[in-house]
Image 1 (tube, rainbow, N blue to C red):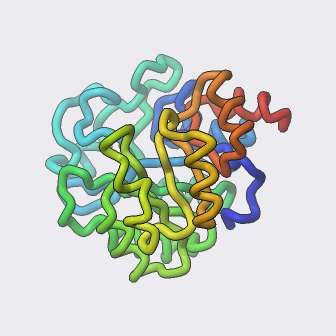
Image 2 (image 1 turned 90 degrees about the horizontal axis):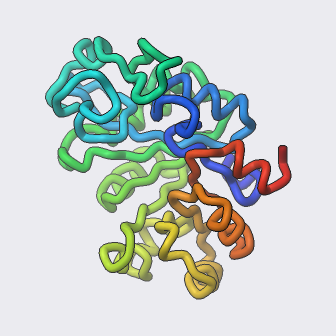
Length: 248
């Protein structure tokens, strides 16, 4: 469970994406081997309603293909090379959420970001909830999203699984960082790095919420977040974060 993890929790952002293609089995396996406390991944639906793990709304940046994820079938997505910029990982595929859970689900805590940002009214939430239940991972996952409605739906389907509202950067995230969504996201908030200050930390401590910060990569920022006493942070380089924390 989340409360059983060390503080600050080191979330491997899209897996160990500094060293392997993001959101791939290779990146998640590497994060586990490096000793990350948790991994973060992005899930959305293919055209045929399969939960696939990929960050962007298109495949253009991280594969050798082109097109929108929600307009491509799982078979089409599986035919792409997801090696991204890492030559050593030629042939790496876009994984399904099932495949990620089968690979590392019993070995590491997982932040599942619900990223149906281009298709907000699809069936992503109930499909993901069913997959989590099938793998019996209710105590090993956390759901996050920039869409409040996703978290509201998930709390109905899996009321015992923690949820966290992602707050956009700067002015765009003011409402998300305010008391407006306390009832929706009462235990955790995920603010952007530049918006985390001692004042924000004091406010969230009074509210009784955990603060998990995205995305923290530079040494100076990692040390600053540690000094602020954040409860967790997302990083592309979990190995470096663990060295700074002197856990490695």
